[in-house]
Length: 394
Image (cartoon, rainbow, N blue to C red; front, side, top):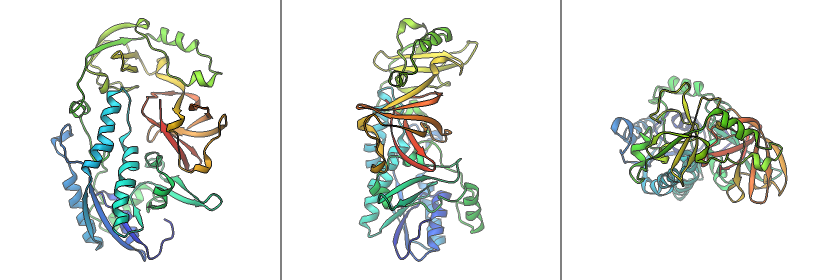
């Protein structure tokens, strides 16, 4: 944790063990520490178990604030969350893309709307229980976003859209602590959340039945499911010149004449590339996987087995206008190429890749074929522990 003395710090106390330990560690400093609980969702539609648990989380947050003797207040950000996050999810799924609400939640809610509230209260910093860190580069006068030392819990990917101002106001007290040690600290100090399960599912919403959740705004349209054989898929891949990074990083060209109709889907918004469950089709030698979603023609393309050639791609691209560099000094110049480590899913092992900055796009060309690349997902790139930037896949 960075050296801070006599500062006013607000902890985003979620009612979980991570933010509880973050608050505990800050309490044992010379700083003035308080906490705020964010209520970001109160709609139970599509929530598994039929209930939203923010009330339980608030109870735990209150227990922690009482134990640590720090003041706790509550803010209701549900309207902003609906506008900035939930509406974004609906629009992305409606377009046949796979959104990442957790990345947007950090950029738009925790370190924007919530940060403004924190600063307006007179505090100077906001602290969270994220497993990531930051450092300061004196040579460029910039903050770096660093991955947490616990590779299994690292959350730098979820913060890869933050800017310099947001990072400058952020504190990550557990960045250098393993998850198991966070639990130990909580248990040793008898914090009420020491055995509380980690939250899962969508940021601030929890586990949902996606079709039910999306039906609030999106009208399902049934359409054809077309299977493309492994042989046809292999022929398509063989036609690609993988020495041309630009062509090799674009999605495969799927057309109905490539395969046979084997069933009907319930609506393209309910599926994502690489998905196996939920198709409702059986009796095939190997499991079916979603290869491509054609939102315009309302077609889902599938193939048998994880070894299907069209399930894996060599690259992806991000529109230049949507490329975000956490440190502006690191921005790539036109036609520049760099080698970085890349992931396009949380907890995915970092993959070796070549980044090429073209006029209209940033190409990410992997050393090895990658499975399940889907438009709408965010790709983030790293140099050692530093997360340098990210952007949504086109």
